[in-house]
Amino acid sequence: MHAVTRVELVEAVRTAFDHTATPTLPKDLVVAAQSAGARQALVQELEQLQDDLQFRKVRDLWEHFPHMPVDGSSPTR
Image 1 (cartoon, helix red, strand yellow):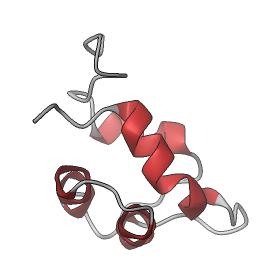
Image 2 (spheres, one colour; image 1 turned 45 degrees about the horizontal axis):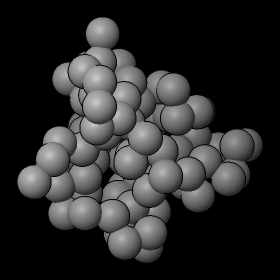
Image 3 (tube, helix red, strand yellow; image 1 turned 180 degrees about the horizontal axis):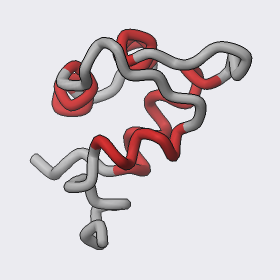
């Protein structure tokens, strides 16, 4: 099975950022990913985030997933 990618993550959690007035919490990301039918590997990555984190935009996630490649063809720099 291939690694979870940033592209895959964005597609799975996009709806969690619909309400920009409030920060998105890790539990919101998990729910969004599960609702989107994301692979279990992606859900497990999200479940490892600390509960007290808050995200205003998807880009904020990259600090917590530096190992995650952008897509299946290229490693993250």
